[in-house]
Structure formats: C-alpha cells, structure tokens
Image (cartoon, rainbow, N blue to C red; front, side, top):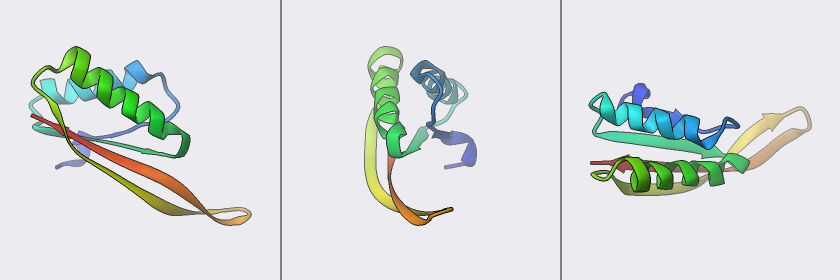
Length: 89
C-alpha cells in the first residue's frame, strides 16, 4: 500500500474524506487505509460506512485495528487512541 492510499481523518466535514476514499478507488486503488486519532475516530468510522454503503458497492471492510499512541505535549506525555480501517475490493 502506498502513502497515496492513506486517508488521515481530522476535523474537516465527513464528505470531504468520503470523496477522497471514492477518488482513490476510482484511480485504481485496490485498498485504502483510513486513519484517525482521538475524537476523529468516530468520524473515520462514519467515512468508512458512508463510502462502502452509499458509493462503493464492490468494496468491503477488510480489517480494523485499534491502538494507543503516546504523544509528547507541553505538559508531558499523553496517550491517544487511534484506529486504522482498511477497505478494499
């Protein structure tokens, strides 16, 4: 999987990320990785569900991984939840 096939979900509207996923598949990608951390996790799940249920009938969820990442902040280290969702044909 190339870096082009990774969608990092942040604070933009959900449909921006759905369009990015659909565009990747229209450009010939076999798999797309949707990544998010913290509060964006629920948005990443929305992106995956909207993409496969409304726009991409031949695409399914292949794998979902959750993890905890340690981030350095001004006040020290903090743990943040993360999710990786792989969708593919």
